[in-house]
Image 1 (tube, rainbow, N blue to C red):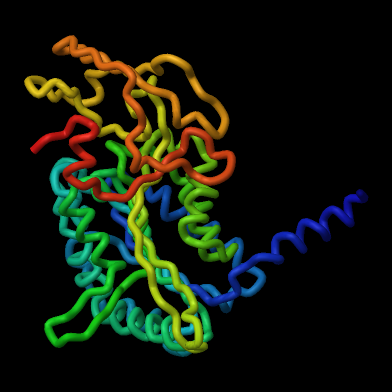
Image 2: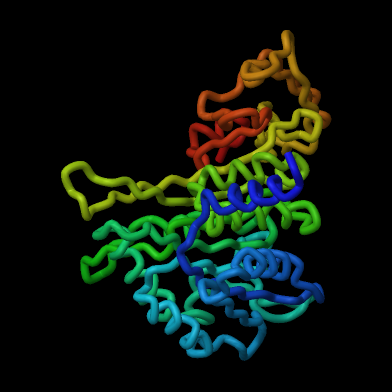
Length: 368
């Protein structure tokens, strides 16, 4: 194939499956570490994709710092979305640190002395009613017309405690799930919430995959869960660094109701199974099964036990564990039934519903 034909084919493929909806992207970032790597990479990537039709992309940025929580500063940006009758996508990108105990997001201070708030307070203080109004207008279009669906997403690029601490996870889920207000009205704010769910994150490893996830959703028009599998699911280094929490909604047409869509919500964790690094079936919260010990996964040794399976049967491999503290030895442990393999060739990639139920936690040695 000649170079000119190859170039033409590449361009044609690039635009075959694209999301042509306009996009309002708002970046809220805390620069306590003196850099905004995630914000910079994702913003530049979007600008590059939309540079041929720049009128379809509107970018706004606000610093997370003391005295800067002024929602009215973003009003002109939401007026841009209003000017296109809310027929566009919406991305809120939060780039900050998180409190390891609560999962709250840092909004001011420095590395040594920082102040953090829950995600809904951050959104209220920095975006305010602009988000509520725009979100509900888009939601109405999505469920009562054939236009769209237009995607409202929030990406939280912070340490994994935000998607790991149960109380924080519940707050994130409520942003996607339907909420009944005190007046009896139902509402939802976002169609997906992305958050890291590991112990820690390394920007240099996870941000390239994060940028591809945003591309997949807002540029290449992929389904939200498929977009995650095609980004982090295909990046072993990124997923081996941290698991990912994704709460998301899918829209499905209702039979015999041409202008109606139903909205189905699910919350999952995508993880990489690695016995060597103490993450059996992607579970870095595994604990010793000895009731008098219950030490965490970093004090356990995990190995395959018996016959090892490969290819599409890899999840059938049993496991043995040895506790380095109490010496407890367990053998022939099978993967819990609620661990699911990812689609395609994403070997050792698994997903499970999040957060885990009490019975699921008992399966992996966690008792309360």
